[in-house]
Length: 285
Image 1 (cartoon, rainbow, N blue to C red):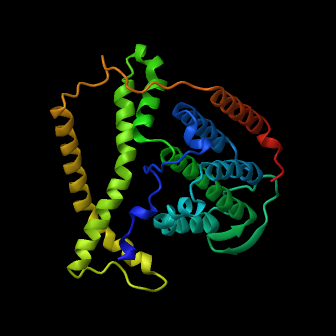
Image 2 (image 1 turned 180 degrees about the horizontal axis):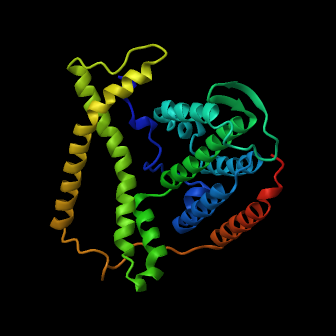
Image 3 (image 1 turned 90 degrees about the horizontal axis):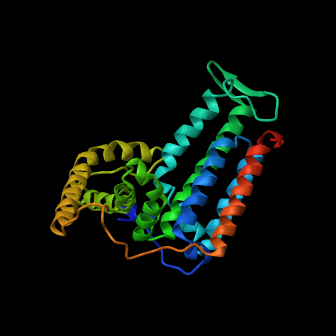
């Protein structure tokens, strides 16, 4: 049954209680940091710049006290897809991507396929950028409760309410979506174990095991979505039974207060963003 345990590999949407400095940071500060670093991620295309950004994200993970091995385990289900896209970039983007800070060098060519220093750099940089975003999102949900995330997003969107932006509804939808990620993984486990107990084969051993397993898992999409709609309907009925009326006129049980540490961290992150974006063309490689 070890092959069916998806929940242990889901890091996004799960909260891990702790008392690290990352846990104690104001949720609004964490969201702001994630947004700033995501902007840097979209602007920096060099290997050196992404190496610096990946080191910063790794430092945040280590500071959170959450096992680095566990964080990486969340990539296990996506490894076949990551490998396919990496191979496509390596063999089919050789001539289309100019290497950053270097002249194009062709190492191998056969027909429309080629391997160049540009395609190799593209694969490495893309993987680094993916890891950066993955670490940031996973760390945000792993060190912040769903309730705190909802209140933090609502608080950050409050200034836009004068423009008729439904701050509370947006925060509620976002946090429910994050909360449903581990629920979907748990339900997928239940469906696969039920199918396996009836004789279903989800892929044996071998080099191309993931191909067969991916094809078999396509048959689980319908029951998984049916269960998702059922859970959504149950949630709607539960909210209506509790006389849910939306965000207008609601009081808050949790009120955040940013400390001096939060302001220092945001200021340092902003300075880092300005420096890295301003000097992004000066990175050697």
